[in-house]
Image 1: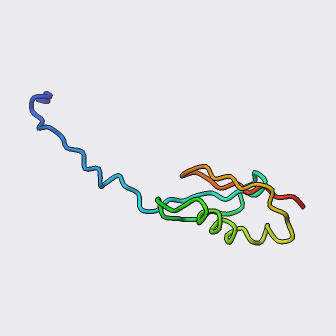
Image 2: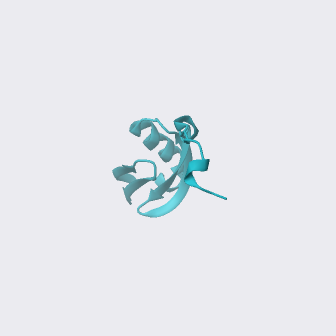
Length: 81
């Protein structure tokens, strides 16, 4: 029957849990407009540029007020106009 003594010591392989890429939602004024896939170690400025390219349709003729990046979750771009 089962007992804790019957099991060997378990080893955790950290490399299994490392993510190479992550999916981020892109929101314009709080409304989800696109989804992008970026490298897990991508810089914040590159993430913002990729998000702008993905949501270019909604950014036409608009003034960007603020760009907010929530790490590993979403990019929110606040626009006016």
